[in-house]
Image (tube, rainbow, N blue to C red; front, top):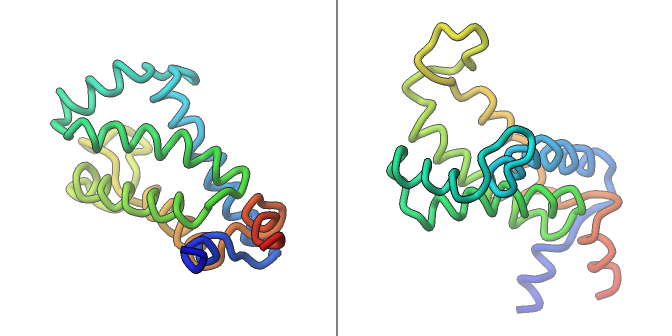
Length: 151
C-alpha cells in the first residue's frame, strides 16, 4: 500500500509540471462548477444528471463520475493533490468524450457553427496535459510534493 501511495504522490519540483497541472485544473474547473453547482451559466447537478442520463443515454454512474471528476478533479489538480489519479480520470473521461460525441465530427472544433458537432482537437489538448501530469506528477508547489517530502 505504501508503494501505491508513493507512486501517486512522488513528483519532481519542476515548474513546468506545475504549469501543466494548474492550466488543466483551471480550464476544467468552470465546466465542473457548471455541472455541479450551476455556476458560470450551468444547469447544476440535477439538470446535468437528467441531461446525461435521459438525453445522452449514459448510465447514472457515468454521469455522476463526469460531474465529480470535473469538479473535484479540477480543484485537486489546482492544489496538486493526488494529481496522477485525477489526470488518469480526465484522460479516460476525454477518451470517452471523443468516441461517444466528437469522433464523427472530425478533428476541428466547431468555431463557426458550420458542423453538426464539435471535433476532438480540444479533447486531445486536455489528454496531452493530463498525460504530462500522469507521467511527471504534480510538480512544484503541490500538496503531493509536501506530503511526499514528509514520508
